[in-house]
Image (cartoon, rainbow over all chains, first blue to last red; front, side, top):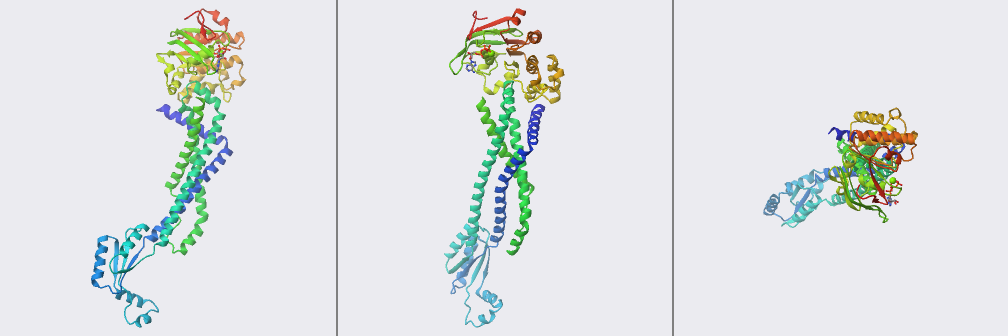
Length: 299
Length: 220
Ligand SMILES: Nc1ncnc2c1ncn2[C@@H]1O[C@H](COP(=O)(O)OP(=O)(O)OP(=O)(O)O)[C@@H](O)[C@H]1O
Ligand SMILES: [Mg+2]
């Protein structure tokens, strides 16, 4: 156990020593890795914020069912029963008299309403569905439109569908971008490690001749890849926080224009940990590939 | 201890460097492998150290058939053998002490204990006062002694050396001779490939003679 810890300690120390020994290389690598991690992360954060806003709006989504003008008590009772059966969520019956009263209360409408020979408004149901996914809303609207004496169903969901589609395309784009940058990060580490291995080919050859296992030979390089990746990930979070700091005031204004209530989320400790871990994992992978290929070649 | 039977090594180019060689070496023996240049001494050395794999035949060391060993088990075999290479394979990017520390780092010995043992090994070959010198600054004989210190620092029960006195003047060579005799006297099995007639004449050890890959005079 002591031996095991000592070996890992040695490998880690050797990795750190090499990072410090060539500061220019280290800084350049960290910038590349930082940028490669920051760009897709920024994409995710933007999409996450947009989705939050969209979620808040669609939370107040309503569907209005307007009855035919000639619908009577029996017809509205039938719809009430069906709404109950469908368990759609909250709903409220708005009789035509109430609707007219509401209209009268609206400024400038009083005289117009008074001049009407009879109430032109239909009875209506206002539904607040529990399930606000665009597909479900659409489905419910379609079903309700087929019910007897329902003249018209109003669902203001077109823009929500558009937003949803936009989010899906955005996510797909960010995923593709993330894969591309992940590949680049692995490739950068692969090459860094390849050069390090070539510089230490003599030591590796001798060590293997006098009893070093592949694990012993690989370990310092794997630590180097992982540590460099983690540092690159931390650098990426610094970039993201700097960008957030610059963008926060104008985004705040924009949100204010749309009624406010949402704040641009800053990076949580968990976000930082995840980005650093992804950087470390990809760096480790690049190093592992590099070492494995080299060891197989000299075997 | 070491049992070689019907060993044959053909290099990919088709040359048979070792042909149907059979011999036994018992624990604590000191044995020379001799022969002209190109006779196959280094090839036999590499086969015994599992650096090369034989074309056919078997090598059993301490009851372990090393020709059937998985690749991943070979490092552990080498840790029990002190290897001294014809070209020494010292590392010139570090001090003499760090060269001797390498085998101990490989087995994961804690640093303090490792330094203590490395110094003891350097002391044994008379290089303690040169521990902080880069091996490039050492003479040929000193470099050879450094290679010996690295080979013995893990206290192996077997030592395999490939021409440890090649290119040395007779003074340096006799220092090396004395070192090997000392290892032999404390019970280490010593196998030395050499064509140093002076050394072989010194005492009457067993000599395994190779000629163009074959054992001279049948099984030794
Ligand atoms: N890696 C190799 N590939 C092909 N042929 C080789 C290889 N190594 C050695 N040989 C050949 O095998 C034969 C034996 O070589 P080896 O190095 O074992 O001889 P040696 O007895 O150690 O000679 P020397 O005293 O010069 O060191 C030689 O003909 C050599 O050319
Ligand atoms: Mg040779």
